[in-house]
Image (cartoon, rainbow, N blue to C red; front, top):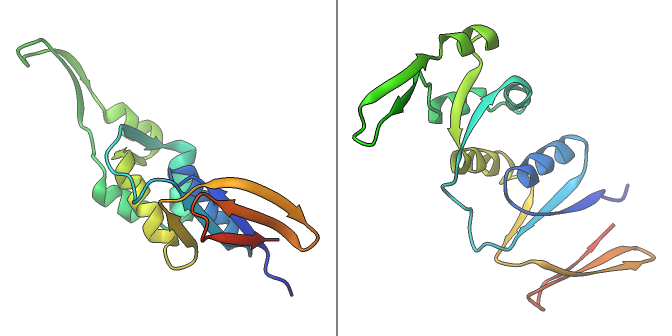
Length: 152
């Protein structure tokens, strides 16, 4: 049987998640990211509902709860940092069955890369600049001339 290969462009959140699920479906993923390394930092994500369920299915629940923030109160403060209003988050815990965590984007990215690092070819510091359909598949040209892959 010929390997079913797939090329994924982008190493944000969606790229590694897609690589995980395509590997589960029997594909051999390659992920290319133009940044020289995994990006860190970024905004925070309120992780609950469908996203939390998907993380559970990926085996990430314990990890997202370990690195995430379990917010107990949302506060509104004035310019001196004094609390002027706010509310507890008990209602979120009740509505989600305790399946609610705030997670840094960089932390989620790191967890996803850890999940795929042994099953996905990952190419950093390069980008796709051309695709050429051929009888045996698609030839992918990367920005760095030395790297080219035949994907079918």
